[in-house]
Length: 461
Ligand code: URA
Image (cartoon, rainbow, N blue to C red; front, side):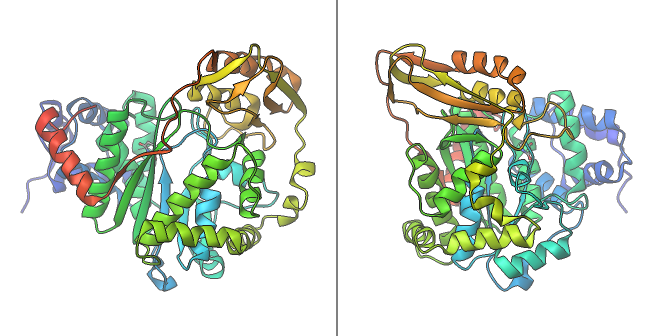
């Protein structure tokens, strides 16, 4: 018989740099999910884990224990490979609206459980809820029925799924323990693996709008997530992608859907090229890992065909209708956009747009009403910013740089000031930045982690 465990001993072990075994981690996760371990002890353990780091084994064990802390979704009954994409979050990041219907149109099931606006980053669910009637809170049975009918479904996390993360994430948010690679990995992957996926494509953002600003921190997290998910039997790849400027032309709620549906309709507007390209690359990997193309390049070609023949658009509209949304809002999406106030911001000097502080741009979008200050607050579906010039573009003084939308003119002053600080106009053009800077597969992730452990003791952040 095992000796009974005491939380205080597990806190001391981690505090003093020791490692916990699967039984001990399971005890903590169970105690978080069922409320038997008080918040102060969980918080102390989280801080010890933050400061001491988690080993690869501990990270994997924590991920699986969290995944198993509640109900799970079983897509096996759908008779198709189940594939999803997860992004670490950014500004104007709306690839989900493209990759989910594209992958579904190519014969895969895409059970996508998404999040809400957080800090400076937008939320897929908030954007979808700007479609009148669209329901994000489906039961697991409804989720399965939409997947059967349409191939893709984008929903919110049900309270029964990964309850341990709900408790631990809320504590991390209040105790300064969010930015830990092991804890982030376990939090993100536990939710994705509870979807019962066959394959997962991770979009790990780098640059001024990314959650982890330093390239090496983002790389370590990407490699850690790939190795952890692969060790749990899910084929996984991570693409490190550029977030040194907003993705595409628009950042907000309804306006991001308008941009996405335009691309699904085959439009090729200036300023949306990076969004289209990244969506095709991500979808190409999903299609490849899901077994529908021999290589990611062939997956890309299939993804492009699904845009060209309208099949991805049909999946998107079918999903919207199946989840109660009014697709007629897209008949004339510009007319449907009814912000209370609109302001155009012009370039204050001539030159090249040489840099953007994309986190500050994200805060500007949030302050216009597209995001929230506190969990549970409503968001304005019509708020946001349309950007008219991208990094590297030559602009003349007085030329429109951005159009801001809010519910009232009083909300404009702070975002306009933020935009002025966040956008740098210089005499010289910046070096172009690669849209995808690095790709981690299982092999490259394992090699990277071996080096990181050797050189940095396994705790590089
Ligand atoms: N997103 C999550 O879901 N969890 C984290 O820990 C960080 C970002």
